[in-house]
Amino acid sequence: MPISTQRWRSTSNPNLMLGATIFTITCYSYFMASVSHKSSTKKSTPLREKILDVRGSLLSLHKALILAEQVTYERINGRVESTSELLHLVLNDPWFTWLHPLSQLVVRIDELLDDKSELSLVEVEHFLIEARSLIRPSEEGDGFERSYYEALQREPDVIFAHVEVKRLLTKVAA
Image (tube, rainbow, N blue to C red; front, side, top):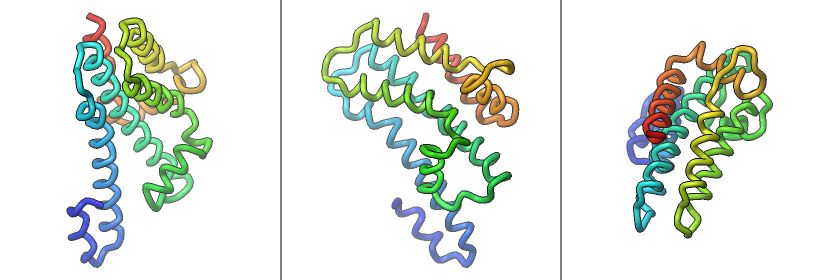
């Protein structure tokens, strides 16, 4: 656990301590996830940079969606007590199932980046097309597109992350 959470242990408010710890762990986890491939690459290529940038923006969107869903979930079902409980819910609870296509896309991009062979334009374009088609919200749709539409309607952070992904996908297509 990062050192910055140690000072929160002395507080008399356990909720403040838990909130600071969750925030720190969440930020640390996403920070490490976003830099892990950048720091481990031996040879950076324009294609690798392109897919890394998309991966990073998809992770930010994923995080915003999880946090938005957590708020709504907690209003109905009560507080989520820990990050491990939230992780368990994201992986196993039907409430969060609609997020799995985005999670799976990021995992497949990670697998592509972990592959030792050189990235091909066809592979990268495949993932860019998939990302573009996935982040199309629809009021009349079902599954991911409908739930995504609803999250965009209620949470500004999801809107900001969505705009960033769309901006990046447009930029890398040029």
